Length: 362
View 1 (cartoon, helix red, strand yellow):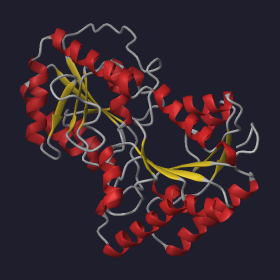
View 2 (cartoon, helix red, strand yellow):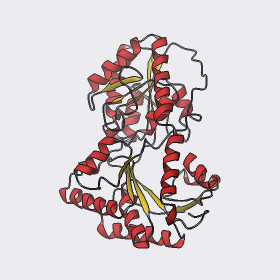
View 3 (cartoon, rainbow, N blue to C red):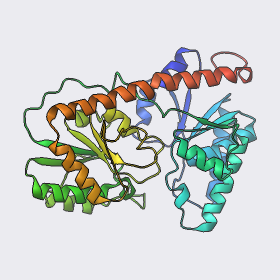
View 4 (spheres, helix red, strand yellow):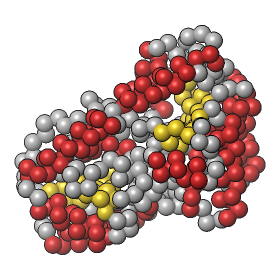
């Protein structure tokens, strides 16, 4: 939203195209032009995928778009191809590889790689949020070295996400998991570690906050979450549109993801709010945390390592816990503040300004 507001301030008319969800009305309330598009994230039906390209193409034509930023895998492929068919310059932003490298079906994997290569070829640039993803695409020759650019994360508003002076009234410790409730985000390891710690320490609490997507094959079933609650392992806080109160009332964020993140937003949010973090030594996670200074890095899928790091954190003096959080906030302010990211977008648009014949264009 910070980026959108800045570009509007500069005179650009912004149109957001995305599947309708709970945030669509938020965009509209902020005065942003919003267009709905159907994208079936888990479909591999070739006829349906061609229809997706056509939906993008129609929207681009109808709204007389001048320049497009695409995000996530299907828009990066199909949106880029549609933009090329319409003669509209575009940039593809790879916000993480997700399951892109782990497709079990070799035909789907080969076809997706080929399509991504085609989408990159017709884009002006391809942006990455971390060096690992960029190097992976270069190694597989999906994108040329000239087009591959590094964006310092999607940025975080460090004024909005900041400590608000909340004062704890208990010596109990609360560990928070926040994010999509998926197995490959490390939710199983979180629950297993919580069970061990809860049996050993009586004043430690574990909370899960996030969206359960029944359409995602890697989603944790509600029945499993209810089982953990009945066993008094975790408490489930449901979903929220404002994560800040939950982060503020926790002592440490745990995010044991082995998913291919871009740069995990929840880690940026927690660090900006001066909360220590325990996360995996994984792409998109290790970029945010300095091991032993602003939190701890653990081996992916290693519950014992996670338990060890949780116990290390429990044993720390309160002053060291606070210093960990402050170091994390300082790092986010220096490297990931959204002002730096917005500057990158603006300079890119200025670079391609000859493509935009006048101000107030989309």
